[in-house]
Each structure stands twice: as structure tokens, then as C-alpha cells.
Amino acid sequence: MIHKIHYVTSNRGKVREAKRLASIDAPFIKIIDKNTELEEIQTFDEKTVIVHKARQAWNLVQGPLLVDDAGFYIKKYGFYPGTLAKPTAISLGWEGIYRLIEDDNRVSIYCRICYTHDGETLHHFRADTEGEIITPPSLELLNARGFASIFRPTGSRFTYLQMAGKPEANNFYHRTKALKLFYEWYIKNLPQAPLPSILAGMSESDLQGPEMHASEHQEEE
Image (tube, rainbow, N blue to C red; front, side, top):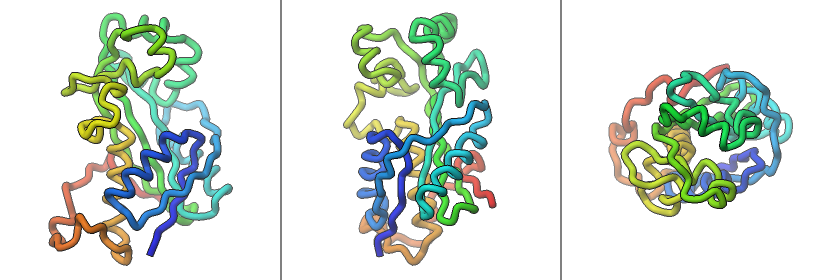
């Protein structure tokens, strides 16, 4: 049986990534592209932002859906800019962002995904990636490709842009990691769903996988 899940976002790249991962990790899931730009309320609280998006999306879809939100934290400022990363970047521009990190360029970029099948029960999946903002190869590239061209994850020699399409990207991309958490949870919590061939023959203990931390998956009514 095919499980249809709407991904409510105006970003086509996010949908393509979700479909690509589903074809590998959960081929019985069909991601439906719901091209909609959701309102992002201005608050530093990650959960409040994503719940607001999920409520909006449910009013549109009235069926199983995914929404997401992403941002980054500058290490020396603690919880800033976080959920306000987009308006901060628009307000300050790249020159302003580089001023903020001139003494310490370490940042943490995160993605929070929310899934609901009934509009009431919300499941949260969060992943982040530590790294640093580096000097852009050129202003043209920075303006064309943005954050991906200057964010280099800890443990890699490449920026997000440079590792695009390479296998190692799955280990670093914050959204990829969050989506994988969701697919793993979905498989384990819906036993009626057919298992992908890569899981065939695995024992129950194998299917449990690594223990999830509270920050990775949370459920609320």
C-alpha cells in the first residue's frame, strides 16, 4: 500500500530531496508536492514556528503532511539568529553577517520537521550540523548560491555546495538527517506498511536502530 504524504513548502529543492530519500529509505511513501508558502511567525521559539506552520498546512491539505523550518545559530551569540535567520540575513546582508562572525565563525545549522496525519497529533524531528562560515570564493557565487557556498561542516573539507550530489552529503545535510529520522520513525511505527527491500530479513532488534534522543523526535497532542 502506498502512503501519500504532502510536503507543504514553496521550495522545490526540499521536495526533490524528500522524494529522493523516500525512494531509498521508504519506497512505499509517495511525497506529494503542495506548492505553498506558509507564514513564518517571528519568534525565537523553534517549536512555536513549526507548530504554526503545521496548523496552516493542515487547513490546506486535511491529510498526512510534512512541514519544516530551518535556521542557524552563531556560536558566540547562543540562540541568535535561530528561527530569525532569514529576516536577519535580509536585514543585514552578507556584509552584516560577516561582521557578526568576524571573531568566531562557528555556527550550527538546523532543520526541524513536523509530521501530522490528523491535524492534532504532531511529531517533531530535529537534526543539526556544526560547522563554520568561510570566506566565499567569489561574491558572484555567494549571491547566486547563498549559504550553501560558505557553510563548511565540521569533519568535512567541502562546503554544502561542493559536496552536493556526493554520498557524504547524506552525513552532513541538516535537512537530509531530519528527513531520515522521520522515515525511520515512520517505518517503525506503522507496521502495516511494507518494508523496503533493504530491510527485508532484518530482525526486530535491528529495526529498532539507535536510540533516539528527546531532541530528535517528540510527539505532542
